[in-house]
Length: 69
Image (cartoon, rainbow, N blue to C red; front, side):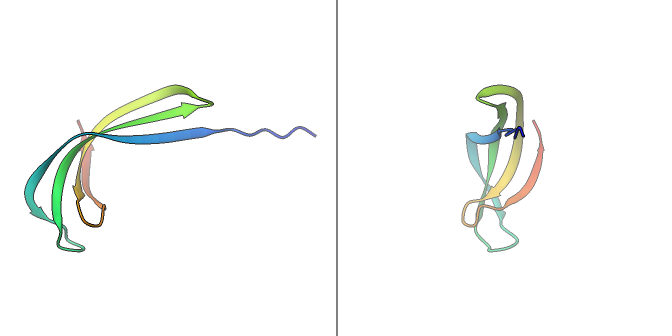
């Protein structure tokens, strides 16, 4: 019997961030606009990249809004 193991890894990196005049609806903390870069790799070989922006709370880390760059 042959068992197959597929390893797909998702990595998210913050490229740039700027504070904005908005507060989090959950905890009331401050928020930042961040430029994110997401990459997926299959067995150490990257095969998909995506750049996007998001509004993230600096205290609790929740993504308040996300949109394409």
